[in-house]
Each structure stands twice: as structure tokens, then as C-alpha cells.
Length: 510
Ligand code: BG6
Image 1 (cartoon, helix red, strand yellow):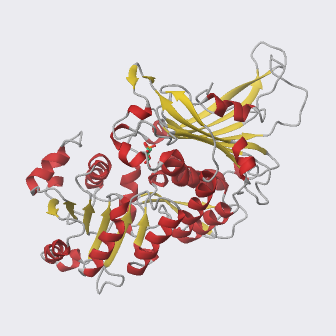
Image 2 (cartoon, helix red, strand yellow):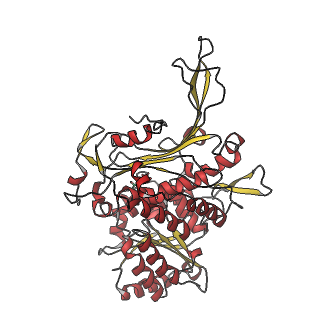
Image 3 (cartoon, rainbow, N blue to C red):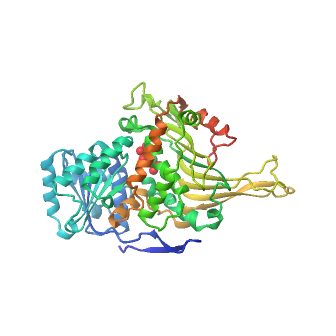
């Protein structure tokens, strides 16, 4: 299968340079050996292997090999059987599965790493010189695995041939202190250019689109400013509860699990200035700059607009959902939040005074993620709708499901005199480009094999994100209750209503 390379060249107004934005592919994936730690875990089975299977279909170099590393005693046939269950369309499965072998290893067993090195030495030298290590394990094992890979000379900072890259799944740390400690260990072993910290939201098609949408369209770019924007909302709702991930989730909660990473990245991409160049470091530098300007307000102020909640028993999609405290692995008296809504401000020239409302939760009414930019009212007072008001313009970036972009505007109501009603223009990614858009992990894994760090978070981004969330977490607020399958705690609605606004977007939040 031939890898196709489609590139569009985007000339940004006011910027002297030309930006190349790889629409599909970019530089080719290089052949390598991909070693997945935690290969028998949920993430590997549900996301990583299906993503690699898709990459195989799309033309991943045929010599690329996958070593699945796990603690359980399995053989190649058994791991292949296990993983096959997670692949729906199995047309290429036979050929793909031949790439996978299994290596049993306890993360702290040094001798097992020697065996892994010997195994790597059995491959063709030039293939084995290019290594990707994916740490899809519990974060407590990240430091141990990194140290042992280095001690056994499996991964090194300056390999004699080829390259070694290491992917760290989230969460990267539990708070700023633990993230710093982890970063200290791994940055003694690897250089920043070798470290790929995952935030899978960055691999989502519409998230990658934010910068293109903002900076290449003068209808948005010129209005992307406090003068014209009334407020921005970042909403990520999940219908699912914690399911079998209780052990991890109860130590995390919505602020750590979603706000610290995915929502912070969405806010950074929505608000950053134009990067100097369209490449990893310039983009990451621009993101850090705006993250540093997120205001850390005093506790008394935060208390007024930080709402935390936990779900109680309810019905989702006609099926009963237990209360969070009755989920598997959750203590009966847990006070972990499964919902967070908050308001933030950014203290820079572009955004001073514009409220950013964030909201995320589990076991909610809808499963969706979107960014809603509401523009200020047009100055004209001559027209209004039948109810005497005029709807503001909105730009809705729909990240999932049904990726797309929607713009709302006013138009004369048919047959009425000059009253104005809101209508929308809706772009559907699927309808335009077909249903075969890349899954987030597919894109991210391909990028590691290409050596492109743009969609991975640099340490200073992670650090700033933790600073913000640690600051919020220090403030004690009451834990609200909401029924599973509802729109979340009523307090979140009251919080925004107090500002004379509503949660807006595709899904009405009542
Ligand atoms: C993960 C969180 O990072 O993102 C999960 O740990 C959450 O709790 C998931 O369910 C949401 O991702 P997506 O792609 O389903 O929106």
C-alpha cells in the first residue's frame, strides 16, 4: 500500500512566512520496533492495537514490528487471540497479527530487560536501531520502566544508530510535585526530543483544526479578541460512568482526569497567539505563553464559580446507572468529583475580561465535546427577533461526535416584517471528507513514527496545566449531587445564569 502525502500550503495574512500544514500523512512513518508496555491492559486493547491495525491498512511500513510487553505468562498466539477480539473488520488481521510478538516482563525485574534487549538484537540491525517505547501502564511504573530500559541499554539518550522515542500515557503525575519528580527522573534518561507525552485530544481531527480555522479565516481571525467575543465555553460531556476504572479514577477526579489535560489544551489552542512557525516547538511555546496568563484567583473568588459534583443513581439511555459510590472499586464515602464546571480568565491583551466557562463530567445526559465562541451583540438596534431579543453570533467547533463547525447568524424571518431569527451554517467533517477520518491514537502513533512532536505536550505545558489545577484543587467547595443521565448539578447552571448567560452549543443544558 502506498503512503499518500497530501499537503496544503497556507499563507497567513499579516504573517510573512508560508506555513505547511500536513493534511494527511506528512513525512512518512519510518520502519521501527514498537514496544508496548501494558499491552494486556485496557488502553492497549481498546485503542492502541486497533489504531496500529488501521495504520497497517493505511500503509505502515511492512517491516515494522510490535512487541507486546505484559506481566502475564502468554505466548504470541495467545496475545494475538486476545487482541483480535478488539478488531471489528478483520480483513487484514492475519497479515497484521504476524507483526506482533509477546514478551513477558515484570517491570522491576532487571533480568527480564536483558532478555528484551537480546530479543531486540535478533531483528535486522537497522530496524532494531529505531525504537518506540509506549508506556501504557499505570503512571507509578513510568520511572521504573524508564530506568530499567536505560540500565539494560535498551533505550538510550544518544543511540549509536537510529533513534529511541518514549511515549508516556496520561496522567503525567498526580499533581505538580509528582509530575516534577517524574519529569526529573525521565529527563535524566531521555532528552525532551525523545519524550512524547500523550494528550489524545490533540490527535482529534477537529482539535487539530482549531489553529487552521482561527488563523486562516479572516471572518474569525479579525474578531478573535475581547472587543468582539462575549464568552467562550469548552464543554466535554460523557455519558459513561467510571465503569471498571474506579481504582484509578477515585484518586483523580474530573479536575485531574479531564481539566488538567484535555480542557487545558483546548483552551490553549483556542486562545494562543499565532506561533512563529507551524512546527512543534513554536506551537508549544505559544501555548505555554497563554497558559501562564490564566489568572489564579484568590479562593474567595474561585468559590463563586467552581462547581464540583458527583453522580448519584440514575438512568442513562434507558439503562440504570449506579451511584458513583456504588461503582466497582469506589469507597462508599468517596468525595471525588465526577463533574466540574468553572470560570477562568486570561490576563493578556487579547482576552482580558472575557470569561471562559469550562464544564466536564461523567454519567451525563449526552456524550459530546465542543468549543462554543459567542460573539458580542451587533451594535444595530433596529432589528430584533419575535421575542424582542437578538441572538448573538456563535461559532461552535464540534470535536465529537459528528465533527464539524457551525456558525449561527441572524436572518429575516420568512413572511414576517423585519424581525430577525437565528439560523446556522453547518459544516460536517464526515459529509465533506468521508467517514474514514483518523482516530486520535492512529494519528498520534503515526506522528511518533515520523518524529513529529507537535501533537504531544512539552514539559512546560504540563507544568503550567498542573499549576492551574493544583491552585483550583486547594479551594474547598461543596460537593453537589446530580442524577446519572441528567445535565449535571443545578449549581453549574446557576453559576452561569448569575452572569446573565447560559450554557450554549448544540445540546441545550437545562
Ligand atoms: C481520558 C480520561 O483521558 O479521556 C477518561 O482518562 C475519559 O476518563 C476519556 O473518559 C475521554 O476521551 P474521549 O476521547 O472518549 O472523549
